[in-house]
Length: 215
Image (cartoon, rainbow, N blue to C red; front, side, top):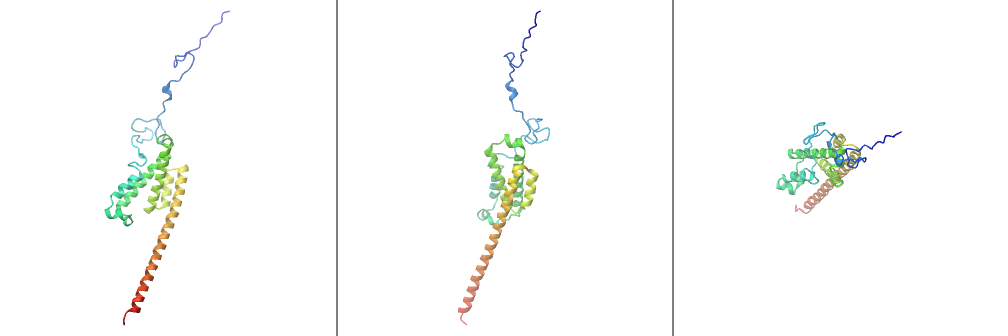
């Protein structure tokens, strides 16, 4: 009785016959939205969330969109006197309020960068993430210096971030608030001390003048 011999079926993917070889094209990374991880994107925007994929709100470290560039442009707008004596700046002026709004927007853009996992791990290097995190701290320091309430900042950060970033920045705000209050107390005590010293000196001069004034 003759037995029927079957030949191995060769794969259409490979010229090697019975060996299945996956083409290199299959290893191409799938492009995803930086914000929602959707694969339904085109060259301009995400069809799922509608975000633009052309505009990069974060930019590069120390670039034109960074806190350092925003600060530099703001200081350059000062009159010459304020550049040399920045302590006389009116932080409640329209220019100061505009500066604070720009700092908040920059902070929100950085928090968005840290929030979306795909954006966090794939598009920026580790060194860049360290720089951006340090930039967040600079912005927090500046906002506190411009009388932004730390509690308000904490609430805003909670809405825009989560995980270790939220914990680190919240803890940093608490430390900076405490240091800021201590500095204000030191300045107040120094002012009181200088005022008392000046009062004593003036009283001494007046008493001396009365004593030696010829009657």
